[in-house]
Amino acid sequence: MAGESSTRRPLFGGAISTAFPARFQDVSNIREVPDHQEVVVDPARDESLIFELLDLKGEVEDGGSALWFLRDVANEQDAGDNLVVEHSGTVELAGLRSGEAPAVAGTAIGKLVSKRPVPYPDYPAPCLQSTSS
Image (tube, rainbow, N blue to C red; front, side, top):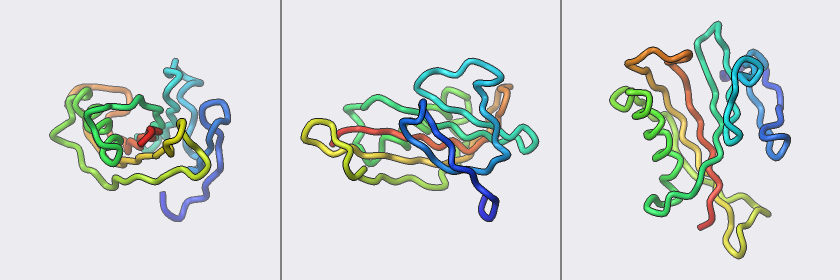
């Protein structure tokens, strides 16, 4: 995706936005997508981007939450052994708070190949989590 022309697009009804290549199409035009997800695909390249709002997992540190959920997705797709993590990190979201605690966005980007048939078995899977520290 580096070097491609990107377009800024609203997610979750415009609550947040991000930029990604224009070649990606909104999956909700094809099938139902849960309210906590935004999914776009490029069927020509068999690639998907999944943006997901997640609940706090008390037993997982904020810094590892997005990676924990990415691994969970991989395991649900029978691809846990085939997950390659490309990036994982967190950033405090300036101006966004949950009570007195700042909100933290966690990202995890990886590639997985499912062992069972799914519509888009080989995809980068970014996860976005907002939690309070």
